[in-house]
Image (tube, rainbow, N blue to C red; front, side, top):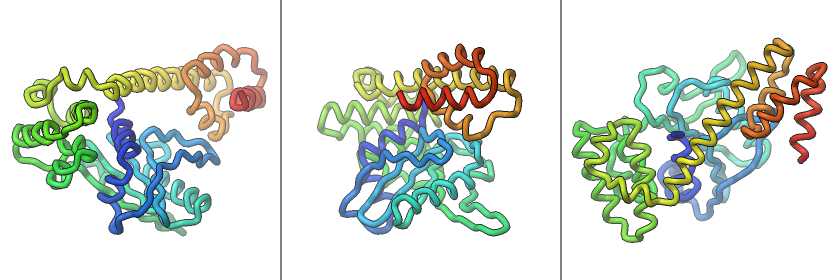
Length: 279
């Protein structure tokens, strides 16, 4: 299950609520950007770009502190690309979902000899639950907030879910909430408070499960294909080619695994990728 993808779905379904939470000035207009920022493609399953009337809000949801390239450098990279493309200020917020003491979760800047780039970090386990309990769009994040009473917090979350009047919305929010609560609480404890039947009936819940399965298949296929390529070509594969391979679908990666036995050199790989991208 891709927990950060659940958050991405939430942010893109309720962009105004997330912008109001994270920006000091309430936006009048907001839209979700589906733009590619590829010089080298970056896998961005957990990234959301929201554009207000005069600003880009870049949200990065993280369950892990491990990242390639490292998270601070990635934030600098995104900021430069967004600024160059849209020519407006960029606010960047990294939201860590699962509690950790890793220093990356407490780092809010990229520093090199010539550059310092700052971004904002939110650690959900330090957040007060009130704002999340009172907003259905943010409610699925509430189980991840600060608490001294897990049962008390889940009880409050369940009550907030039950107060959502529209049936399909209530089912979807319950499904999101149950998934994210799994980062912090046991299934048995969650099910004491959230109705499993309601969540399973949610179309969104089923879609998330399906997407999670697809993503797992893609990641497994990418890892296998990369091993084959390394055995065939060693360290001669440029990082830009690896980036292009990383965003292929599971079926495309399977086709590449078969095709690479016909390649004489890395140039043949680049040609194959260009043909695949133009289909």
